Length: 448
Image 1 (tube, rainbow, N blue to C red):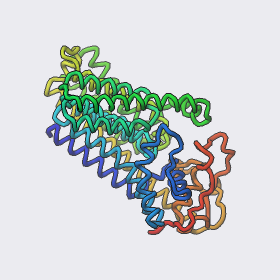
Image 2 (cartoon, helix red, strand yellow):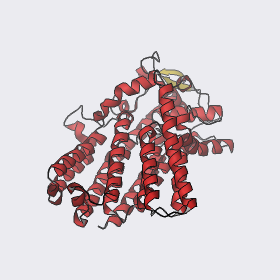
Image 3 (tube, rainbow, N blue to C red):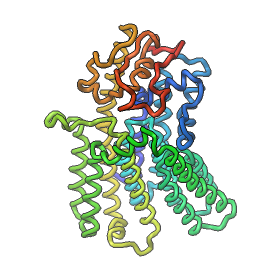
Image 4 (spheres, rainbow, N blue to C red):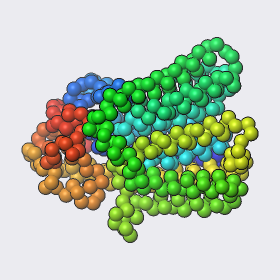
């Protein structure tokens, strides 16, 4: 299979996953349900602070427009919200794959980003980092494949920069990286004044994103939620979907640095082949070892480590293009046969990564159906502790403070019944108090 065919196949796979995840309303997972009911109850964007506002506006606008037009079916609204959340990163990654499809080395890196950054952290799709990481990958693809003289490319970079200006806190380090690459691309390209101006504005936007992120981090440094996030950021290894590909990358990197010729042999095929098989079989590990489960909330925990991995892979892309006299490992990677093999291996890894995604989504769909039956058959407050919510597989999706919102969204008559967990909202607080309240959703309802 040619590199271009691999790029197209993975792009089709990503869109198929986006459609599947839309139909199962996966945007409701964890914070998603709370965000949706706040949108519908208050009738305006749920952009709770500046560092992520632009992504929130783009993903929430379709829901608000439909609600304003009179749509009251929460199932349709949940699908539309899920579609917006998945379509944006999918479109950006598709664009990046097409943009680098004729450079096998760059294509291999983008495939690695899809397999090891996006798929292992996207169950928590409501997290703005999904869009931010994808947009930054697309921007890097443009910056490294432009000759520096195209106004269309410069305009694209500016648009990406404006979106990332307020997208996610990880731009505190990803923003300056993109700004540096854009300015480098201007220096090696033509001298068209309009193109240069647009590129400089794009670089300024990415630098501005770093400033916005820095200010936000300082402002929220002592917030209980941020403190909890910092304390759990080192637990990324709990996400098997992330840890398995990462282990394969590290093995190949260490072996390649020590002996670049190793990359020309069967070693990478054996290592990444085993990694792909382990990843594809990961949904069933628990059959032989009960603690080895895929845990959707770990996608949220691994996002900081995924951002660092993304930065490392983007730097690798830049070095691959910028080095005229590359070190031995890059020289070997540039060999056509080695580069083509990398494309095939990382394409296979992306396919393997889709299997646990599909398996977890099927379990999520069953969880939604279970909750829907409970709230439609009962009245009043239903204590979560009286339900088998800590049993398999429901325990994979349990988040105590978001249950009122989720039970309201899937109810035929919101307000008739709520599922509420008995907790003090101190040990596991919502990011903001409104997310833990009982939603009204007057006039709305889940329709089959």
